Amino acid sequence: MSEGSGEADAAFCAALVRSADFDRYAATLFVDPPARRSLLALYAFNTEIVRIREQVSQPLPGEIRLQWWTDTLAGSGHGGVEGNPVAAELLRAVQRHSLPVAALSQLIDAHLFDLYNDPMPTVTALEAYAADTDGTLLALAARIVDQGSEAIDHLARHAGMALGITRAIARLPYDASRRQLFLPLELIERHGSNEADAYAGKETPALRQALNDLIGVALRHLDAAQQLLAEAPPAARRAFLPLALARRDLGVMAQADTDLFAPFDRSRLTTLWTLWKASRTKAFR
Image 1 (spheres, helix red, strand yellow):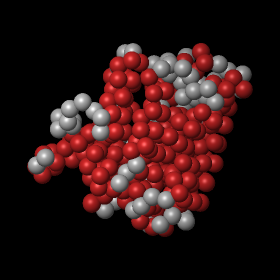
Image 2 (cartoon, rainbow, N blue to C red):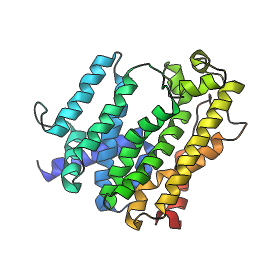
Image 3 (cartoon, rainbow, N blue to C red):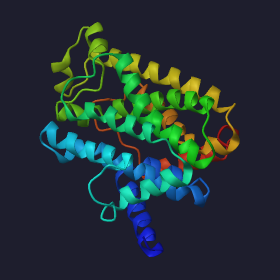
Image 4 (tube, rainbow, N blue to C red):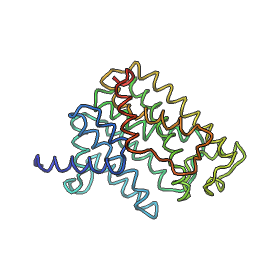
C-alpha cells in the first residue's frame, strides 16, 4: 500500500471521527501527533461499530457486519481491506502498537446488544456493557499513547463505566424514541416506574429518582477512576481526558431543573474548552 493511500485513509478516519464522535476527536488534539493517527483509527473503528444499529432495520444484517469486522481482525476476512480505509488504518494501528485483537473482538461482541430492542436489565449489566465498550477503548488508547498494564486496565474499566453510563443518560431521549432502553429496567421498576413510561419520553418523579441513582453510580466510578489516574504514568493520562467531559456533564445532569428527557446538548466550543482546561491540570499531565 502506498504512503499516499495511507495518508488518504488517515484523513478519512479523522473526518469520520470529527463528524460522528466529536468528543473523542477533540480529545486527540491534546496528544502527541505520532499517537494521534492511531487513536483516530481506533475511534473510527468504534464509530463504524456503533452506527451499525442505525444502518440496519433487522438484527441479522447487523450481525453480519459485526462478523465482518471480527473476521478482518482475525485475518480470516474475505478479500483485502484496501477498499475500507477504516479497516486499513485499524490494522496498521494494531500492528504498530501490538494492540490485542481479543480486546477489539470483545468490543464488537458487546455491541451485539445494540441490535436488539431488549431493555438493559440491571445496573450490573450496564456497567459490564460500558466496561466492555468504553472501557476497552480507553485501555487500547492508553496502549497507543504510552503502554498497557493491569493497573491501566483497572483504571480503564472504572473510567469506561463512568463514560458509558454518562452517555447512556445523555442519549436517553434518542434511544427512547426508537424504543431502545439503556436505563436499567430493574432500576426504574424499583422506583415504581416501567419500560412504557421511559418510552413515553417524559420525565416523571419516579424516572427522575432512577436517573439520579444512575448518576450516582456514574459519579462513584468517575471518582474511583480519578483516584487511580493519579497513580498512572503521566504519558498515559492523556488517554483519559474524556473523563473531564463526563465530570462536567454529570454535574449538569444532577441539577434538578435539567430535563433528562430533553435532548442533551454540549456545544463543540464547550467541549474544546473543557478538554483544554483539563489538559493543563496535574491530573492529566
